[in-house]
Amino acid sequence: MSGTERFRLGTGAGFSADRLDPAVDLVTEGELDAIVFECIGERTLAFGHRDRLSDPAKGYNPLLERRLRAVLPGCIANGTRLITNMGVANPNAAASQAVEVARELGLWGRRIAAVGGDDVTDQITPDTELDEPGLRISDVGRKMVGANAYLGADAILPAFDAEADVVITGRVADPSLFLAPLCHAFGWLPDDWATLGAGTLVGHLMECAAQVTGGYFADPGKKDVDNLAYVGFPIAEVDPDGGAVITKLTRAGGLVSERTVKEQLLYEVHDPNAYLTPDVTADFSQVTLGQAGDHRVRIGGAGGAKRPDHLKVTVAFDGGFLAEAGVSYAGPGAGRRAKLALDILEERMTRLHGSNAPLRLDLIGQNALHAAAGGASIASGASTAGGASAAGGEIDELTDVRVRAALRADSRDMAELLLWEVEALLCCGPAGGGGFRGQITPSVVTHSAYIERDRVQPTLRLVET
Amino acid sequence: MKRTVPLRDIAHARAGDKGNRSNVSLFVFDPADYPLIKAQVTAERLKTAFPGLLKGRVQRFELDHLFGLNFVMDQALEGGVNLSLNLDSHGKSWSFLVLGLTVEIDREDMG
Image (cartoon, rainbow over all chains, first blue to last red; front, side, top):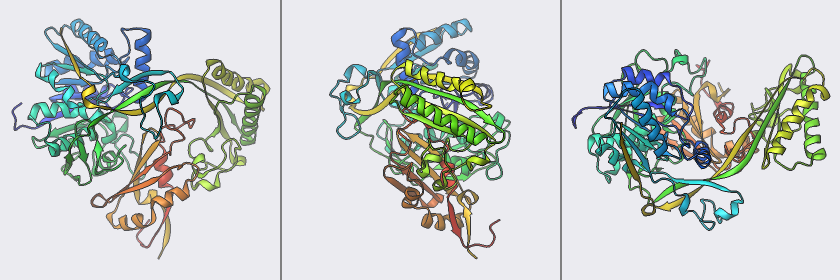
């Protein structure tokens, strides 16, 4: 593309478990210059570290191969550059996997780049300060799993200069994945803060995929969305000055409206005047938006100031295990029987087994999500009138209710004990209990820290297929 | 005539999380209702309504030209996604906790 044309940028994934078919549609029909798959969360990164430690060839997104098989031929055929952080804790291994997939698909002579340098685990010491007053690594009292700095768009640009078709990174700030191809296409300078702010706005609106096209939005009767089952992922048509139109494929389901864009504008934003990324201190406080046709919203007005001097670091620690188990009661008296089950679980876990691990006991359908907000005691199973509209109903009115027990434990044995106690309710608990299910999830705890920029050196490895 | 309506009738909202901090954005459907949510849905109102949830500071940012408010709530997620035992450990449903609050409205055309 030339320097004056619009750049067409798509989102292929907004989180690690995102759908595949909307990405395939975009690659096939979107006439995109680039597509970004954003697939890292704090937990995914920690699990990536754990996977890599047990097998040096792992630690990247488990869906990498499936995603690439589905979209790579279309990307190559249509000249769409693919950028993704699916490298998670091991971008090099992910790139090797990508090379293998490309070769199997007969895509020869293509360049795959691995961008690393975000792993700063070696630089963290027990004395490293965390982003909480007076707290150091050693105070956490848990085993550190890994630490990653958030890289910016500048870490990705060398891969474009090397004409990579696919760029695979580890931890890069989400909007930076989108800003990088714009910087490259339009030649934006690294200290053109206002323009970087505008590009960061585009990235911020695009990074959660369907959340700007009608996902995480529908509220039947209040905010209706057409054909949500086939919600499309977004396209940004970006001008050389950073202004843009957010849209989607015409035939895709979903909605792009001022309302969907407004909600995403503030999603996970705190002070709209200062949205910090490694690239810029973006200012979203004066953002303008306007409907510019069906499912087309024009955005502008973002600004920016100098980027932060330090990079944010996520430090992950082993968090033991989360145990969750449930059993259901229905019909007359269901609420009272479920409440009796909760009392039994509390008695046996804390007094018989002496567990001091945090235990939570809910009645799903009555008080599982919002009851705590009003200040009511969860374990009491009582009505939570103090919580505004938080409570689901009086206990005597419940006729179809599920007991949920959840516990965090350092030992797998204690986690398994909770599942056992809930299952034992089938024969030993209240009448008519059924539908036991239980699961144990390895858990991580994350804290934030900051690191000087010059202590983080992005790396580039290029492989040709 | 004054009447009491749930926020959900006049506004929409979205919740996001970072660590143990939650933010809920709130936008009115009709700009005419913006002054009343600005006056009635204050940071203090949220703290009072949800004492069991909001353990820290609540800040409110105003985007007047978009007719929206952004509430940033510290220590609001029962420890956050990594520690909370809440089924909704991200607090994704907190937007509807806010939309369940009521406001007094002085218009007759509200259905």
